[in-house]
Image (cartoon, rainbow, N blue to C red; front, side, top):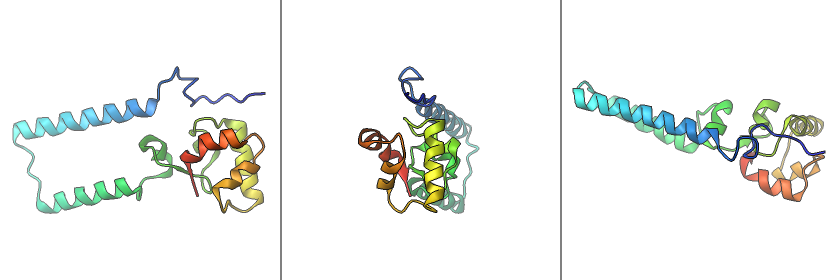
Length: 137
């Protein structure tokens, strides 16, 4: 029996909602920046510029981003600490497969290599090839 994944591109008609969220957020940030520039009320200090640069660098590196937000900024999901809900954000993983991943992780105490996902019932070479880019330890 094939698992249904509500987050897969099949279920959403080929649309990825994360792209839409990022586009809307970018539009809103750009519009507010434009408005501040036009009104001349954007009086940032050099310290604020350094903080913004530090934040941008941490966002790029993935540090400081909560586990729940990783799917929205296209960062891999840490399979050793992810709950079932977060695992379900990986395309191709539904509720039953997420439960099996967590059960095997608990049996082994944690995964030591991404390839250990192949031992999960329901993950064969083809599914593993499709999901491994979305996973990290």
